[in-house]
Image (tube, rainbow, N blue to C red; front, top):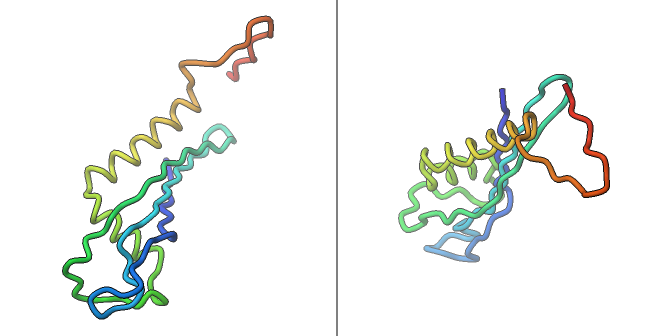
Length: 117
């Protein structure tokens, strides 16, 4: 099973917007998936940004009260379920290729690395 960690702690905010201070409008997200298999830990990370729709803020949260969990929820809602699934699937595929590679990089004149069984 892959565990996904969404880090949405880095944000861009307007100093003042609509009478509120430090209004988050853009999130720099980093999603890391990890999986333990055969006594080894495998991981893959995707990064990106997501703009938030702040045109109709109904329940403003002061920045000093904002949590990573809240920003993750905002980010995933802005992305939509399909994009969230796409990101996590890409991470899962990268981990699978790390566990079961289908391609390796070799250097001519050097021995091929041993294959773990």
